[in-house]
Image (cartoon, rainbow, N blue to C red; front, side, top):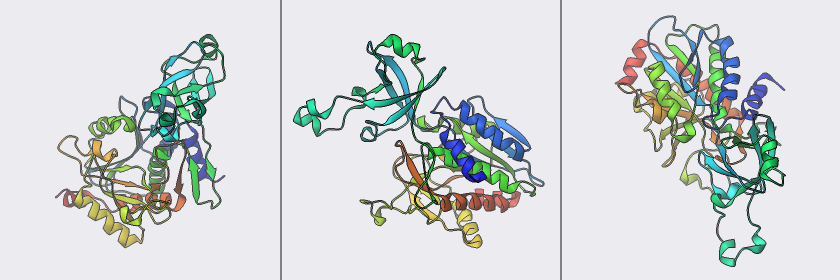
Length: 357
């Protein structure tokens, strides 16, 4: 396995829902330290590598997010079945009968999400999606005491059980937590690309915590770093699967990274977005423009800090977002790394002032 795939696999296989990002942060620090002048952290756990400008005093913040969606154990019934609550956005139809990792202090237990079987449901109940409150996790024990002896406690995190996989076409990569270990990997590789090169803007590149529960780490990061510009690096919707119409949006796997014009959290800063498009055109990097009416990214947390931080989101189209597994295209990932690297190289004090209006 080459170094890039090893980075991707390590990041996506690591477990860390919102609030439990410590192991992902540890991985990020290991990758960021060799390519950074210093490590920058906030008190919630967001972590960045910093490259200092050779000339100029402006700063750009580049951030993926460490956390993935998952669940938290809220109760253990007398028969050892685990009740849970969602952490981040879940659609109930993708959850039933899925294998889960119950992360305990004693190690990882395998579980499966269950509910009443359809055979005993009333006809009207069969036509409805099962409510999440009626689901449970079965770890294969017969009592509450046995579950507790296995190490389960209230508050333990749960993540989907899915391994990093190269698919039939090896450019298509399947994993849990692409949302948003993709952005973590891009943030690392941008600094790797800049190693040994002079830059004319301070580059702070890494990842936030707790994006999936309200862009919380983005807000603390922006106050910690005090950037002049910011790029969130996060996944977007793939519109290339059956039932999706090309008229609904741009987002075909393999056609280039996404530059988000607007989502529910942020209108991509027009001056910065136009500069990014110009860099993409000059460097021959394909870009897909996307507008999302719902959802948001850390750009929504970055842009409102201090006197305002011109912010945009650059990502990749992702199939099956917010489910147990998802698929992206390696070319989109690599072009996102290339685009952000070239944007950084294009910036200096004068250009930042020009972008800010």
